[in-house]
Length: 106
Image (tube, rainbow, N blue to C red; front, side, top):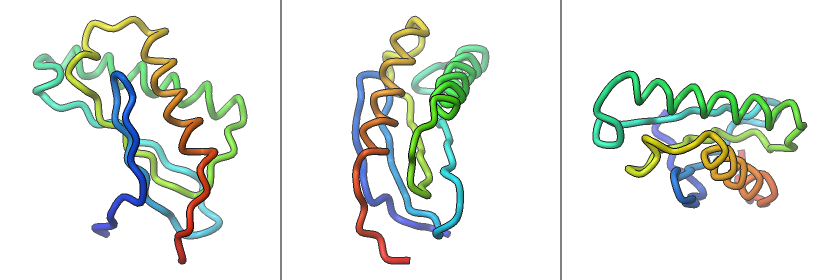
């Protein structure tokens, strides 16, 4: 597996790495929250629940994402953040990467 990310971008609360998938696959989304970001499991799970809700809303909106793996890594300041701020940050990163064209030969 060990694929390298072809693109990275950073938001206020999350960093996003993108890796290509074979053609014909649907985009995949993952969220990584380390113990350095949120020391308690309750906090880490809350951040992941917010992440899943944002992705669900964007999929329902009909993002036109190429077959990519979107890996979000939470940053230190996200722990006590309001849902609207998380929504705007993740949504902006998804839109930014969905509109970028990639030259990945498969």
